[in-house]
Every structure is written in C-alpha cells, then in structure tokens.
Length: 72
Image (cartoon, rainbow, N blue to C red; front, top):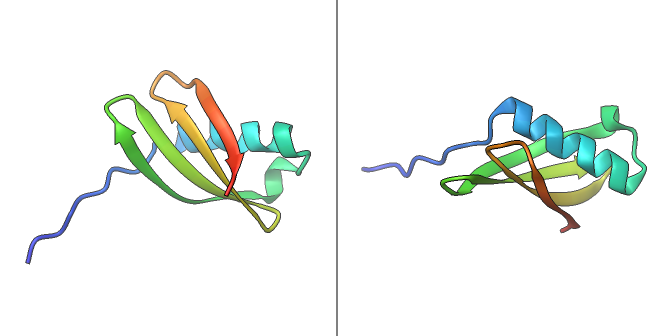
C-alpha cells in the first residue's frame, strides 16, 4: 500500500490566515481554529479554518502574503 503525502501549511502561515479571517469576519482571533491545510503549488497553501462555527478557506503564499479569504 502506498500513502499519498500531503504537505500541510507551516504554523506561522496558518496563524496569518487565522488573523486575516479575524479581520475580515470580525470574529475574535482566539475563536478561529485551523481545521486542515494543504499545499496547492510550490508557493501556495490552502488553509481551512473554523471561525466561530463558520467554515472559511484562506490562500496564503510562502512569503506570508494572504491571497484570499472566502467562506466555504
């Protein structure tokens, strides 16, 4: 059996996404939790977050630039 390796976003990039979601949604950043993350391409990660019960998707690059924040 082979297992596909999924590369998750580094913690600092997940935190950047959580802060971006907090700013855009008005939800306290302490209530925003990363649920999952995956590498989209060589420079971009997608982070799924739970913002007080609302699912949100964030795209962030390896330089720490948040590309988008969208409800799921």
